[in-house]
Image 1: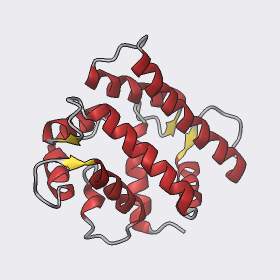
Image 2: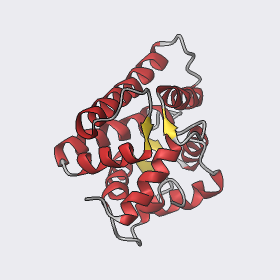
Image 3: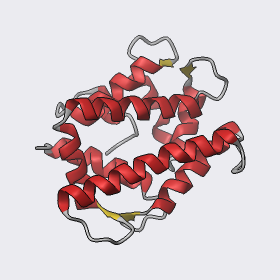
Image 4: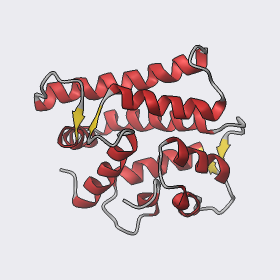
Length: 185
């Protein structure tokens, strides 16, 4: 069962994907996230990279919708409500192997797109761009970056981001730095 702190963070992630602030997620929300992320690299909608990114998000959407329909008997409407989102993550977090696949996929997407200079790490500027792509308040980007950059080297390696994602989703410790990964929750 997800705890109160986890639930607050999951609501935050839900709002990151709810690009039109409608209170429900639709595939068009996922498409808008793809468009914002693709702009970071200058990928055009007809490019191979754009299509591959869209395919990854389509897979996530299909997996999310399928899981919700299977596990919480969601109606056949083309959206995901917050209660369904929370149930999806409760089910996913109870299955460690499935969760690990999800985190590595998500971490890979963050790096594939946000590592604009292909350096193998994310710097503050790239982290700032991630906040902009997800329409997060950029005033929190520096603070979030500093909390995640535990070794203070001015960059986030892929393993640091993947570990932070795991801590973000699993931790019920209010002092966990990864809680602030996407700003206040």
